[in-house]
Image 1 (cartoon, rainbow, N blue to C red):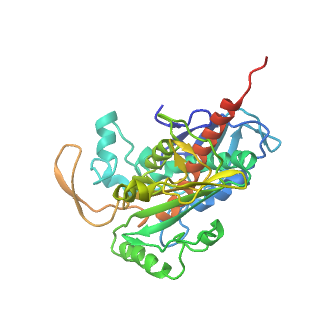
Image 2 (image 1 turned 60 degrees about the horizontal axis):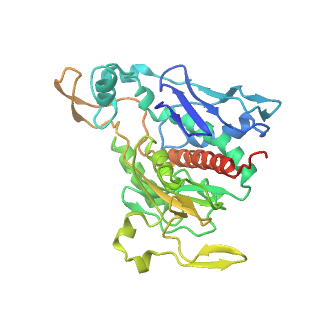
Image 3 (image 1 turned 60 degrees about the vertical axis):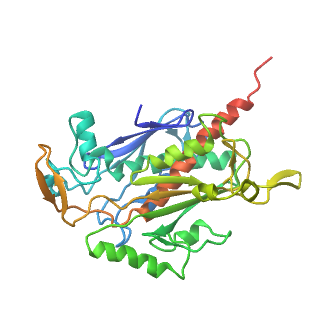
Length: 364
């Protein structure tokens, strides 16, 4: 179904932007894992609105409630239902969009596909749907910590409106990323990057950019060799994020400009383990992880809903000009960082379970 992601470790998200709440059902999570609302809340707090002037000023506490699947602080192996109440919905701000299509939003395509749409905040097309993804990713993170204790997923904003951050040091960690509201890796260029977002915000406009993600401590062997390649599933996960428009792993499109002699990653052995001297492959070869760092980038477009006047049409096809109201992010990037991390953990948890099934030896 279109609202479900994953095979063995699966999530189904539900809810609309201005409905009673949003949430997720996590199915396939193994039993006996320690899990509390605090474990999930830490990640939701990184995604929630109103964190700084760089994000939407919608005031949502995003307090998670666990309704099933947990007993005495541990998972039962049964479906885990998590939900967050919508506390600051203001549907009246969207009244003018009731019969008007917002440019580059999902209003027209939803109407064309279903013949009906929730015009209040975009309904399911709103980024508020990602609350369920982040909550589900937090559960996946608990599982990954158990099976791969050294695995670390760190995402950060690496480009804003065409302005790239310098390549961050290999010692980059989550704490340094969280130290600023943009989740930017370089303190020397931070003020300029924030200025680009502020400039768009003051103009009633928006900007996009790129999020990079690095996974350290990767095991060897995750991923399937044909249709469910690890990089293919990561691409699907990332391109399902609202506003995502591009994905590249390792050298990405730049690798197309190199010769094979330049792009190939030479092998060598270190302490009995096969390693590569370079990592143009981004940690994946033949759709299967090779144990090197997993590294990829996700491009996100500018937020579609802006307050500047834009040409559009009504549901009846009549031309009109829309100046959108409501509370919207001038730049989705800082709040999308935990979403990218959550989707990464969901993919890795799913493939970890697949690999465990492959390694299972039947009784004789």
